[in-house]
Length: 260
Ligand code: SF4
Ligand code: SF4
Ligand code: FES
Image 1 (cartoon, rainbow, N blue to C red):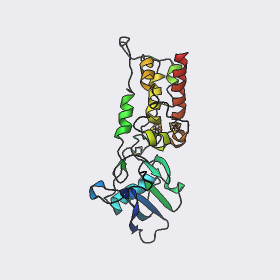
Image 2: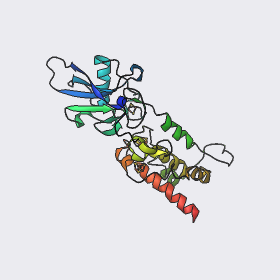
Image 3: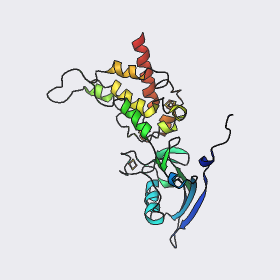
Image 4: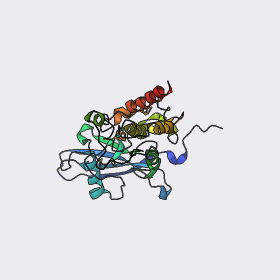
């Protein structure tokens, strides 16, 4: 029989509320944060932290670090560069995937809700398990494939050929795009998702790569490439302003070109 209700342990309950506002604080915000520890066997919950914002630096990540350092050291989340470069601080903030280190807390109202990237298993709190996402990236073999003997110095490109990689090489693999893509939610094991396909297109378009045919063969499958239905969530959320949907359309075009 079809199950019409969510499994019991998927319901997110009400959690703790901690008020940590220094005396005389002029401004405060409430951070509503998803908490989950699979080791406890308990359901996930929303914890609320009310903090004074006067001394907090401008980004959502600054507030999260403040909460972890000063209010609740048990909160788990990934971060590293604090400069929008490493891609590790991607979360769903007030319903939209983005990087906490490049998003200002003043862009939101009094309450800021933070949950892990959608539709990925959760390791703990805001730490998603991105094993499948990274495996798909590895699957597109993100390095130069050549048969020509290596040159003595560098592989040269014309400025025009180099320019073709703009809008693709900048990807920081934050997974904001793939985890906002409905096709990826439902077919994440078989559809490569926008990030891996953007990366595939980066190597297909590289004038020095000599494996375009093999790369296209590897994607010629009803699920790997063709589950993209041009919904465009990926391009809307990318914190680096990249357009994976355009890259996917380019791969589809290459597929057609080689078949005529
Ligand atoms: S355009 Fe394609 S890859 Fe991007 S969100 Fe839509 S279905 Fe997913
Ligand atoms: S394309 Fe953008 S959203 Fe997707 S992984 Fe790369 S940087 Fe992140
Ligand atoms: S901490 Fe590196 S991108 Fe945010």
